[in-house]
Amino acid sequence: MHMFKTYRLATLAKTFVLFLTLFAASAASAFALDLETARAKGLVGEVDDGYIAIPPGKGGEAQQLVETVNQERRAVYIDIAKKNGIPVEVTGQRTFEKRYPAFPSGTWVKIKGAWSQK
Image 1 (tube, rainbow, N blue to C red):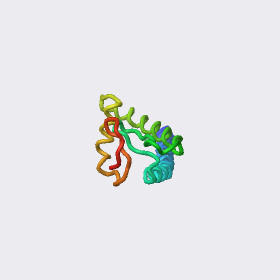
Image 2: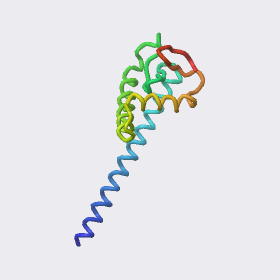
Image 3: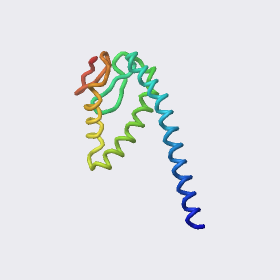
Image 4: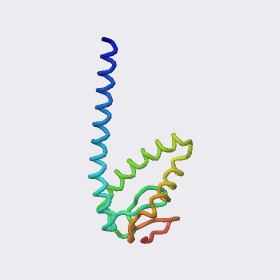
């Protein structure tokens, strides 16, 4: 009987984790569309530290998006940094370096303090 309860709890826990994962993925997908749209409109750009920012002269229309995305990215960078024993800043920089080639032409980027379009 004890084995059955343990199995049920394990199954329930796995189901709950799966649900949370799917929920997070769907929320991230919907959110990523907003980020992609903002990036395509030039309202946000990628920075070489792994975060996003508002390019010069673009106003504050996307400020809330920038803050939310950067909070989410920081949480991921912290997790990666802990797992690999490296500073959080290095994690952000490496992520930018890996993602840079995939940025579409025209994406605003800030490298070494200077804004330009890819």
